[in-house]
Length: 142
Length: 377
Image (cartoon, rainbow over all chains, first blue to last red; front, side):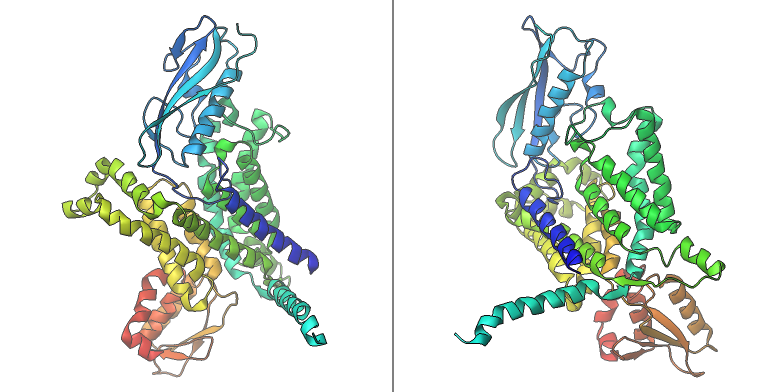
């Protein structure tokens, strides 16, 4: 009986903790904040090469295509202005993680030093703001 | 300070603990969870469809950007992962049918949860809700009725298993259900942009092209894109979510809350892409039915064809096992006796019966507000 009581109490407290955590975490797991914002965003994503060139990822490179490498969470076509479905924090966290993933998972690319996204976002009705995100510097580059 | 005053708070805590224990341990019908189990299977299949579709094309999650929650989380070889998804689909069908129910439900829950936590990119609120529902179905003995397992027992002339069980999984699921609406409503209430109408207004204005394609008159489009409209509409949305979250807990307001929740989910489904959330949200509402069965009586005149038709309809649609169908004297009117002994006859009885059947409840509940039906009760 005590075990049952503790189990139920534990689940209730855990759920309430997740709801509270949703107010500061990027991904808001189990916080059930539906349709949180009308914010939108777009980004110019480039590969910065060892010789300093900035090449848009819309152009295929070393047999890779951005929209095949990044297919989820509205990130396939970053140059197009999108709704941030689960909020801006969530969207920017995903974009930053995607830059790292692409940097780490394109072994045929011997030129790119890092990837960079110049993100313009509109937080609900606020004027646009700009933020620059960068991937990790790739091992073996330079 | 006297002894009673000193013992007061601890006695109150003991009393509260005893009440909680009674509530959690009380044996109640698992019928609502059995019905939800059947309805959850299609939700799982819908949820798995994009994963399976990708797998059939030779792609899985890690062939493109994904982000593990933890480095230690086990990842399977390609073929094994695809096999696991297939197994989840088979288990979901078995769960719905009630074949090896406990095993099938536990397997469905385990695989769906495993898949959800493989990557942050897999996470969506509707999937989280699905995992919670599956987890609580897996711990509840909800396969003893409305199942192939129960049918096989009957066929083998083995005694039926007890269809009642301790109520705690049901209470937890009710809490989670209310938490979904409550958390969503609260987050909007606390956000000035949401509560003030900015968020909904901007969403509608940006979707103006889609709105123009809908078969709605120009004045409605003008109203929907008007900033002032959203100042009030946003508050209505927030209030609706919070009313549902609170209203579900009281028997006096429960039917209204369920009715409102169905409208809410259908509106969302019509206006946004929310994967399995609408279907699952409506399906879970069955858990708010009082967890006891056959505690109402539908009394018919067996010589009247219309009454026999009513009995057939009620038997076919009474998925929650609300009614016992009994025969009254020839020439008697159709009668429904509620669990408190109140008897209703004629057309109001028909409306009342329909309001207690899952498939027709949403349509019939407003009829209970009609003066003639209210007087009859």
